[in-house]
Figure 1 (tube, helix red, strand yellow):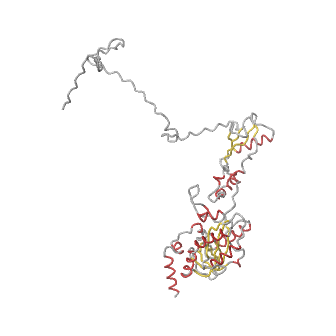
Figure 2 (cartoon, rainbow, N blue to C red; figure 1 turned 120 degrees about the horizontal axis):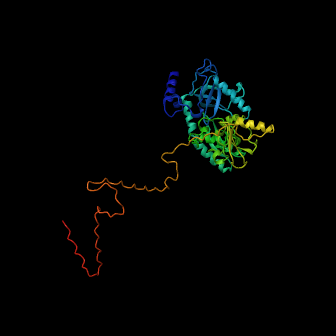
Figure 3 (spheres, rainbow, N blue to C red; figure 1 turned 60 degrees about the horizontal axis):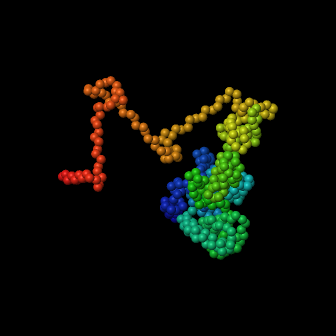
Length: 432
């Protein structure tokens, strides 16, 4: 019987469209895929009983393999749930799982939204077994009911007049429990909704609130950079984004450009802000004025990574712009504090930087008015004087002298008008 069950599991794994099909071919499960960088280190792969299991909607859990079942990444397992059991995919094994659990616990203490991790090892739930063909059939039947359940739940919420949006429904692997993911801008009293849903679908109901970023990650799409959305590809934890991240990077505070498809500030604003903050510490403050013998200079713009600062003699507009290095700016600030004013912002003997020649547009394709220009007519070159023939003399000819070598044009007789005395000529017969 055990050999027959193993053969059935192999057949199910090879069948396309089943949950094991992607794992059998080694395909990662989108952003739920985890890279085990401790795999090739001795003692870092299999010296732990903890495994990481993923479910729908980027939901992860950490479970203990107390019975020491040989598990690999991609295996479908039945794990302990409340109540019953759930079906998920193993995405990580070894010591790296315990490291992830500690990181998630630290993030929870800091007020972030980490992956779900137990606070104590005693609270860790267990892995029951590898998923059998019967478990996978019930799992697929439960997943097939999710779309219809979501549509009916939306109608029930609309009839109750609740200001909320049910974005997705996830059934537990055994079909005894359903998680309803909803979005709401304000506090919602859904006690009556839970009673009606439990009577309608005959399952245990759990309501879980998600944000606009999580919903955008579930739906997916293409960002303005031309790549798939980070929240739908690899991001699982969402950290709050503030407008100060755009100010540190000198990005225009345009709400239409700063907002993503979820109508919130783009998550990518936080990707490089730490580098800008670190580099700006070695640059003078923007509010500092530089005094020279001839004028007072105000901050205009800063190139953080080149460490170059541009100053203007007017605080509101660009006037008499001068670009200096951060070291020179600190020197001028030190002189001003000592009561001295240099003759100019630039150091003595410093030459003006030569402007690099712009790229030459040979074809003129960059000019927008290239089709509006009128073509200039080229002047015809005067014909060269022909060489004198044998009968002609080679001496220069006088322009005033009459030309005898040119044939005289015959004067055409004026045609007679109709009605005059002259008879018009008879038309010539056509020639064959």
